[in-house]
Amino acid sequence: MAASKRLTQLVVLMTTVAALGVAGCATGLGGGTYQRTEARRAMTVQFGTVESVRPVVLEGTKTPVGAATGAALGGLAGSNIGKGRGSVAGAIVGAVAGGVAGAAIEEGVTRRQGVEITVRLDDGRYLAVVQEDEGEQFRPGERVRLLSDGGTTRVTR
Image (cartoon, rainbow, N blue to C red; front, side, top):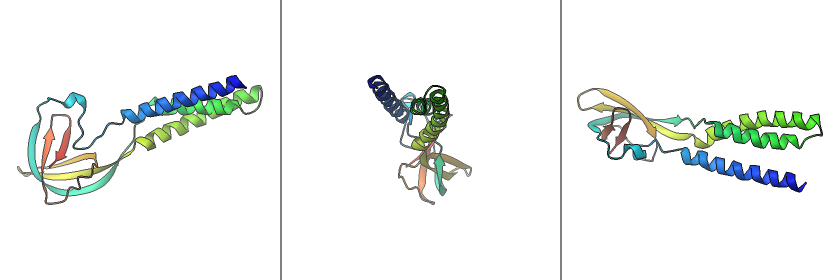
């Protein structure tokens, strides 16, 4: 019994570490958040006027970590059901159910609120940018700048 309890504690510890790792990988996608690789990189600056702003949802991450962690916990929990073959069947069912649940939990925990900002550039063209909502509260008619490095574009004041 003591070995089973230690194994459970080890799995819980590993799950906590994995969950923290997933949360740490969820980097911001807002206008004021830069990845380390974007530092000291020249960007093109354009100016324009906000035409519209609408809320959107940025889907969460979908890595193997959530599913694997859920499968491990579910398998462990399921193996405690029954004896012999019942224990094996419980572990298999628990692992599958735990994997599905773990993946869904990871996606839900890392999901973020975003905004789609449509901007009329000074040259008359329109550009729409989706970024994480960092509380900027952009409003139609407001002057903004768009920073672009060829792959990433963000709207800022």
